[in-house]
Image (cartoon, rainbow, N blue to C red; front, side):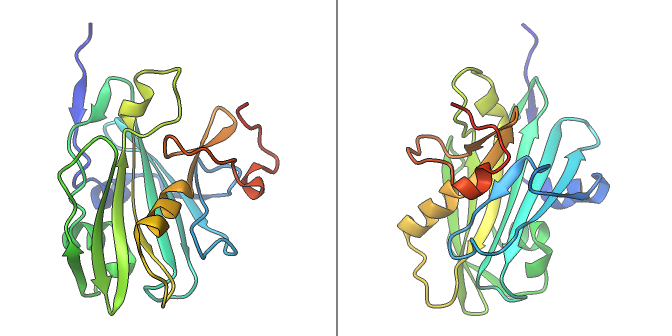
Length: 213
């Protein structure tokens, strides 16, 4: 059996963006779809960065913000590796990573208030504050609803941030809603990125799509 090649994503975001073929795409073209809590009325910005220079990882992006402020903001990257590659290390989810991955925070005073646990198989979060706003950085690794391909879930990862509107409590229930609002288009169908969510796909995402039965 051909050996698997390890790929670390810990410091990849800002580097990847430098050489990737960045292209804005429509919701119908994007592999990543986003329906963030309290931001459902806004149209996300979707981008496709393509494959990296080593052709080992493909990146998609979705982001939405109500104003040019920290509150009411959600930004997510989706990674899919090529065959024979898998995720070796987790994302650091620290101040440096937030500033590097999301240009909006580059010159802002990001402070981690609750560090992320060590990389694991599923969801990890780190709480942080920016100019009085309380936010969460997260990583969803090896998460897939696909039960027909035993290697698919080992090649998929999403990282992102979410800052709720002012006055909104950022608790575990709201973070769960953020995770449930990340969707993947695959083989002409839309499915949730997070495994084990027994809820229908929102109809606004299914218009003109073929849903997996």
